[in-house]
Image (cartoon, rainbow, N blue to C red):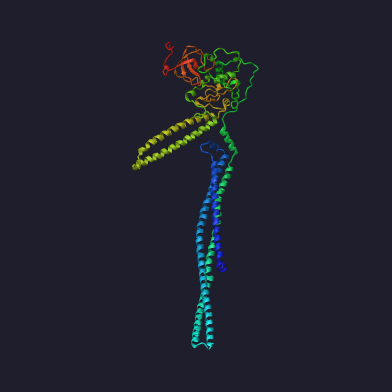
Length: 614
């Protein structure tokens, strides 16, 4: 089938059809272009969605991704990011392989179509010109024939008329001959023009037009094939990314299958495990017998001494309700402006004598003598509320171990970075030494020395934290009566004060007190007393003081003074209203700061109290 033979007379319809084919191609290009825009928009939205739910750096969310379920979700987010990338690949490939190629092809197709139909119009114009020439020759031949007939009839009429002269007859005869000759010439011209037209017409309809229409047909068929190939490419672009998208989906499935509920449950244990034993049973307190005991230094010290060799209260561990119960805080020490009457000096009233021992022990725990147990802390560390100690001693044992291990790993990474920098600079220095024109070798010495100092500091830090870590790891396996009696919260202080005086927080009747000052919340594990403080060297003298009033120290850690007495100052007031003084090597304790007049002197250590000082 050929358009040249079958559609020889459908030039206008073919022109319309080919224009429609180009319009279809342009419509398909527009469709693919909009598809690429949709793919890009979809990929962008997927990326934004993935980014929106990604954990923020250096935030608490990063810690949550330890669990398998959250890690699976993070893997899903990452795979969705890759999934979005494949849609970007689809858009890029469709743009380059379909939209761009077809756009260039449409321009070429329009030029080719224009050329073919220009040749077709030119051929039509030529055949039309030949037809017009044929018609003109035919009309001229017809006219000459009619003129010749009229001239012949006129001659015959003149020849039959006897009245016409011979000259007129001759003239009519010559005119008739001339017309006949003209008719013959027109006939010959018409015949020649007709033959020529027939030849041209044959060539036009059997050669020129079929060739032109054949080219147009081939052009249209190429357009059809090209749009089919583009549609195949359209599908192939999608098909090429299907394996990668399938891998993304497989990874999401794999991440979902990796979720381990048992492991997540174990991680919760590791995250919040304190390392303490549950509280023991609470002993029955019999209130039917009035308690006549009073709190004194001897009773408290005896109870402390007994705790060294055997458990208190008949060997049973008192249950501490510290996670759930907080007792009311007793009143603080008297202010600096208080008068001597503000401190009780006389004997206790019957009502005071009958107060429960636990209440009087709470008063002791919130009074200044308790700070006697934390003198190591007061020397080395002063923490503000909310700030954690360097050794993480404010955390439970298990959590503290994890924090210390993380700190050691972080320091080791920092050391490795510094060592890498040092190695790089060392190599650079060697290059400078071998090739002085490249740089001055001495210019890196300062940096190398600085790196060496940094590495040494970091190693000291690592040793320090590893020591704390070894200390914690050495304590964690212990499950003794002491461990079961520990409090659930650590004090926010250095490790030298952690094991010092926690037994003072448990009263003889098994009650538990907890207090919090404005600066530091003291939380101490209730372990048995040792002789740590008895073996310490005495604190140096920092000055002297004169007692302005008489003070009778009735609680452990206080000392009685008489008005006008001169004593040594070994620890000044830290803002809590108490000053620590010493009478001799065996007698020292705390007195209210408002009861004494302090004379601080750096050289007071070597000064003896003499009558001249009084």
